[in-house]
Amino acid sequence: MATALVAALKRKDPTAFEQLITQHGTMVFRVALRLMGRPEEAEDVLQEALLTVYEKIQTFDERSALTTWLYRIVVNTALMRLRAKARVPEDLLDTQGPHFTEEGHHAREVAEWALPPEDALLRQEARSVLQQEIAGLPELYRAVFTTMR
Image (cartoon, rainbow, N blue to C red; front, side, top):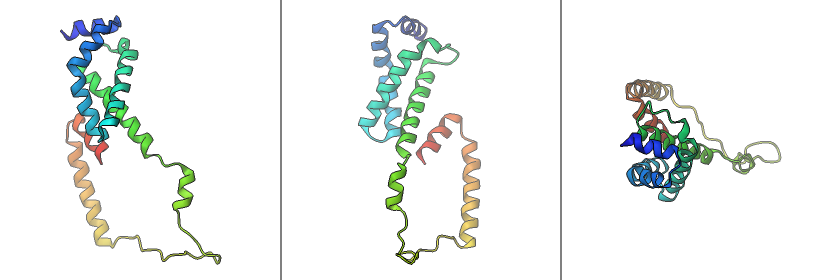
């Protein structure tokens, strides 16, 4: 069944894309929603991912399942969007930075940022244990976990 669908997709058969959406659209949307958090953004990711499938179906070599390939495209599309959203324009950084008096002193008192040594050590140990546990997860779960942080 999947082989016939892939062959039809490679022929750019419009009914094959309808079948693809019918069979896998819900799964793809749920993955996008989990990563993006908002239905509107998940719909955009879904649309972009389906366009990628349409454009790149010839590169699908069928060594993996079609659902695996779709999942990877959706995750990559969502991650690219999340990275783009995370970038802060440089012109906004100046307005949010520290303010100084005419003498060059901070306009407000600066809080001490350094952690006490015990807290820093506890955080380092916790981070180490967490990274070891994450490394033990299957790759699929590692990818989702690291994007959700």
